[in-house]
Length: 391
Image (cartoon, rainbow, N blue to C red; front, side):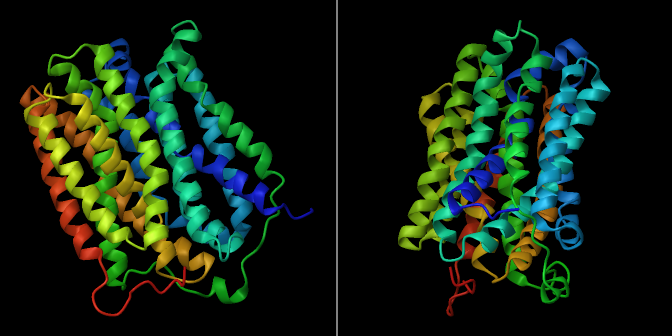
């Protein structure tokens, strides 16, 4: 098989990144309707978000092992096929087991592909990692925003059948699969295969993982319940969905601009602190004054939370040198981070069921955002520069 040009490799990376989020975020604008039609509690319907995130955590350590056995590129190809097939299953989503089962399959595909895409960047874009990371994080956020913003209108176009609207996201997965069939598979070298397991003994790996766990929990809790919080506060469903779309679309801009600023000015850790503080302020306002200037807080929240996600996602690229080492650091970050973060949507839903309103769970989310700011400050290297990746 002929090697692809760098432009085609970048396109393959972008298409894969776009497919890492719509299977989760596409449920957000429809979740209350689905829960009502299927007679599911909020705690149970939140599994459609929590299960993929949990799989993304628990199965992430498998990624380096699969890459060693089958090759990094071939494993990513299989993951895209699994994501596409799982989304097609949602054509039968009016059955609760099928809907929830498809969520688990989506999570399995994302769990393995995520760490390996970081290694793919490290392998194929030596000397250009900083710029490529910008496009990678932008692609992920583009997919997430597309799932949140476009699912409702697509559902309307498809006869107002929400199962069709959810299954429509199989199309970009199949498009990515077609391109990845042309990406040559490259097996790992003997030195790489013998490089050891996940970096459990590295303090900075744990610090990065803790930061990622909190921001992932915040993101997926908001992806699941932000519309419901606005609607409960007295805003119309149309207005609530518009605010959620604003949150996601501003995140699309943030996911491109903040990594660019981090690359241009080498200030990623300072930007992480700013993102954490902005998220804390916005969540506090949504908790206690949700109808006061909601557009302003939706914009700032999209900036802060999506920015912290985009920046944290690629922190392992700046810590180690080789593609498989990057995959291992990323796998640890996703394993512990998503496993813990997956609890946030479920606990928020259960908190709503127990308290009778969303204010209590959103108070907890605000405290978590403040802790995120503290961890961002702790991530800044002290003394000797900790960025050993030479990027």
